[in-house]
Length: 428
Image (cartoon, rainbow, N blue to C red; front, side, top):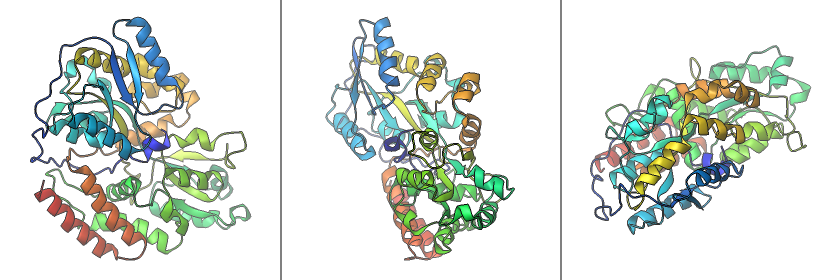
C-alpha cells in the first residue's frame, strides 16, 4: 500500500469499545435518497498505479447513465478525514461513495454520515472475517472492505544464510540471529531492527502489535482499557529495551514507514517491520535499493510465537447525503467483487480483501509474499468500534513515545495510559 495510506493505518486495539454518547447526528437527519440513481462521484485516495481509474473507466463504459467521477482526497490522513467531515457536517451531496480508514467506520456510522448497507448485496462471506468485523457498527454493516493488509517482517535473507539461521518467530530469536549477523564483515554498521517509532499513528500500531504479540490487549472485549497488565509491559518493554540496548537505532525514533523503508533498502537494518507496499520498492533493480533480491519476508515475531499484526485497510461507504445511493451501492459491490479484485490486484500491489485473491497462481507468482501476507491478515486483530478513536490514539502515542525516549519508565507510561484511557472511555 502507498505510504500516505499506510502511515495512517491505526492501532490494532483488540476488543470492542463502543462509545454510546455519539449515537446521534449533530447535524440532523440525512437528506439523501436511498433509491436514487444516476452519475456519482467517488471520493478516494490517489492511486499512483492508475489501476482504479482504469476500473472506473470500465464501469463507465458499461453504465453510460451512471458514470463515476473520481475526486481525489488530500494526500495525508488528517486532510482526508477533515475533508470528509466538512462535507458531512454541511450535509453536502458532493460525494456519493467515500473511502474511509477502517478506524473511522464507527464514528461515521454513529454520526449518521454513512448509510447502513444490506449484507446480501455484497457477498460478504468472501471477505477476510477480521476486515468485515471492522466494517460493522453495533452489529450492522456500514462499509465494505476495499484494501486490507498486515505488517510483515522483512529480513536480510542473504545474511541469515551466511550464519545458517532461519527466519525468527519470536523476539528472542530475532535478537539472537541479529547478534550472529552483526559479527559478519558484511554487516558492519548495521542495526538489528526498526519499525515505525515516530510520534504518529504508526507508533500506536507498533505498540498495539507488541502488546497483542505478547498475548495482551489494549482494550478487552467489554471496552475496558487493559494496559496495566504484564502482557502490556512485555510489549512496551520489547520496544523500550530495543532502543536502550541499541538494537533499534537511535535514529528510528523519527521513523515513519518511508524512513524505515529507506533504511532497510540502504542496507542499514537486518530486520524491518513494514507493510506489503515496500516489497517491490525494496526489490527494484534500478539501483535505488541495495538489497534487491537479497531479502525475504515472514510474519512479525512475538514473545513466545509468531506475532499479531494490526489490521490495515480502507473501506468504501455510501454518503448518507448522496441523492444517488442505489448507484453508489452497486458501484461499491462491483469494485469489491472477486472478479474486479483479481483485476485490481494484477495492476497494483494493494492487498485485496477477498481471501480467494490470495490463492490465484498468477498473483502468487507476481507477488511472492502473498502467502505470508495472508497468514498475517488471518492472525491480525481488527480495530475496535470506537468513536473517539483519535483521542485514544493520541493518549497511546504520547506515553509510548515518552517511554521510548527514556522520559518515563515502562510502568509509569502504562499507568498513565491506563488512567487516561479509562477517563476517555468513561467520558464517551
